[in-house]
Length: 267
Image (cartoon, rainbow, N blue to C red; front, side, top):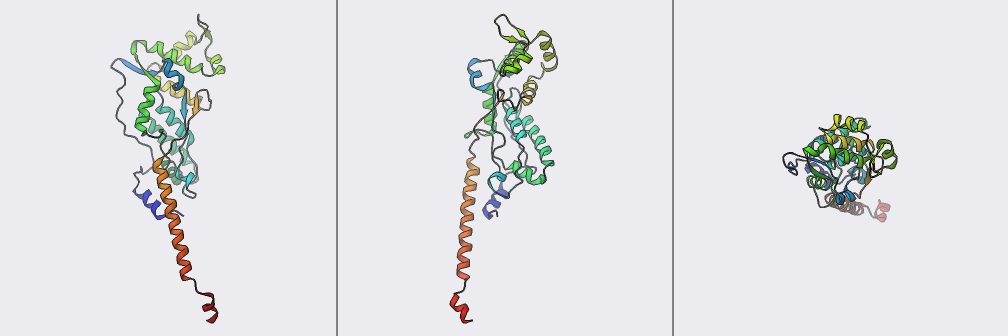
């Protein structure tokens, strides 16, 4: 049974009616005019920030409070949203919209769609502790991306794609069929032409699509520690204290109302 305190917290919480994610983040101004934000080739950044790192859906009310929700969370949608935030050139608005569409589709198939959406909406933030999600998006775009002059876009795009494929030996062998003078495996000229024809004007879509294709491959997408949602933890702590207080009051009330056994015998 949910405490009166927790119900009041839910009523007063600032939730979207459909329990959608929506961050009104300020527009990023990372690159200058004539530049494009692309996946980094910087050696220092590549050490820790080329492969994606996700947590999936953070804990929701359904997981920590029995009976609150259906218990089903759209983990694939959560992972896609994190990857989207980490993809160079994406926008927060687009990432959130795609997540919301994914959540709606997922919950529409649940036995209790309303509670499924509620549980998803109750989930904590995906950003590391100390950052809000707008700050997290800006951080990831800075750590994982470089501003590239439009005149060098084609060359940079192909190099970053070759580096992407080289993360997995099997996929590297399948996709990179040519060998350079330095022995490095490369895309064939035919493959380059096809990629540039389709993706040159939308590099963010290219890397987002590819990462989602290989989302279950740990060479491309790893796991990171789930952040601590201090607000949720504090709410749950106060709820547990309120539940205990109410239980103690009920117990005391029953004891006070209980008749003395000897008095019942006299009756």
